[in-house]
Amino acid sequence: MLHQRYYKDYGLAISGLVMHHKVDPLEYNREVDDALPLDGLITPSPELRKLLEDLDTSRVKPWLFTNAYITHGRRVVKLLGINDLFEGITFCDYSKLPFVCKPHREMYEKAEAEAGARSTKDCYFIDDSHLNCRHAQARGWTTAHLLEPDMPEPVERASEFQIRDLDSLRSIFPHFFKTSQQNGSGQTSHAQL
View: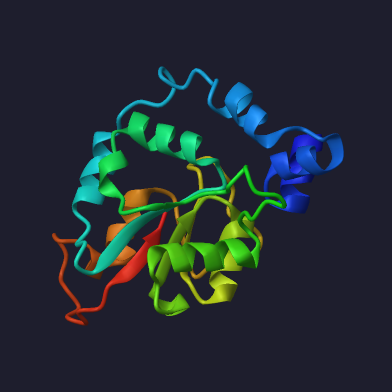
């Protein structure tokens, strides 16, 4: 399938559409991503909100990191009811060609700069893409690969941590949650979700 091939080859299907089919990325975003009737599909998640509210923001800076364009990324977190819980967003800028998107090194560098990370060791990353997690882990980020509940275990793990639900973050990163024991380091890390 063309979509899957472009996703695999470029990290983002729209990159292939722009490159090979001269699709206008901003028009695509308006007509496809922003036009999707998500209001009934994505609803507020009290569980996710509770998890994010429990983050100790003196120790971790919640930061969105998406391959979507800014309007779509903001729309999704607003529908989830968590848009006020992030300090910023790094997104794929469809207005600038060529695209910079995950899993390319430049996108991770962009996220580090925009989030104000002092070191790759300060970056914690949770993603459902095996490829994105593999690249973040190789870059030195502490990474958790989020597997869908019905997804089989990958033959090769993408990262040190592999989880089936976001609440598992409480057990692998307890020092970032108010209701968990603190590790006393006092340093702020940057969580890229």
